[in-house]
Length: 354
Image (cartoon, rainbow, N blue to C red; front, side, top):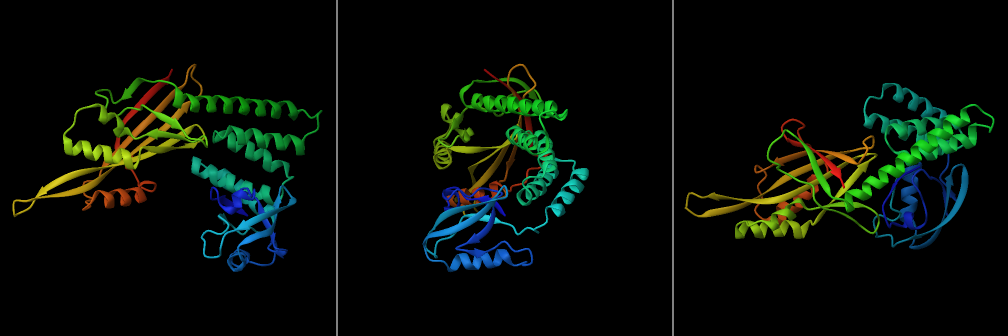
């Protein structure tokens, strides 16, 4: 089963989607209940193929779909651009695991794992009504309103007749999630085009950080402008001015990663410190400052409210001899960097969008 797809890779260009099951490639079958080494066999066979067009058959919602995929030269990596997982060809196994995991779920991460198990069940048994109903309920709880509406709609298609008493309840769930999805998308748009008005800060006092500018790229993804941009509007020393400008030039924006109505932005900048050597000379070092903005969109208020918890960590113990080295190493660490929820927390900021 396809778990993820690299953008613009051959798989995406061929129309392969997450959740598709690879059935065959060039008429060689990779859908076999008895074989446990299918993934390895598929990768080896894929590597052996010449560049050019090849015939791939996938299973999507129980139907076989033929696609033509154009592979790059064998020396190119990745050739297909997917991550995949071999599944047991028994949907009941994953359904039972999902129900068991749901009983023990207490966090969003737990619910995402439940979703993964139900999605595997759906891929193997695409007409099983209970799977769609459970996915609709969980996706709504995770605030993935579009996916909730989609799964409730499929449940209605497979499980209910027009005179069933549950039709009205499911129809209401579909409309409720569609409405919430529209509101959420509207607020995301206002993040870019509206003015952010600070209405509350915890703890109170002088504002240490502000949210100013967001941009929308051609794909519809939202980015936050580098927070150091506001420093260019103030007078700072010449050498520090050069460091600020270099940071902005290297990373003018940072992506906003959404998870339902929650989002996270990770940013960083490189700063400079000087140490006096025993010889009397000064030596420069560069170090990173990691930042994280963890946001929540309040859909229940009469006007859009966004709550943001701001975390920052000055790592002057991570010294590098050059700006470029510090920049590259910090960028590699940024995504997985672990902030201390107590020590690194600075502010909680509430904004109204106008």
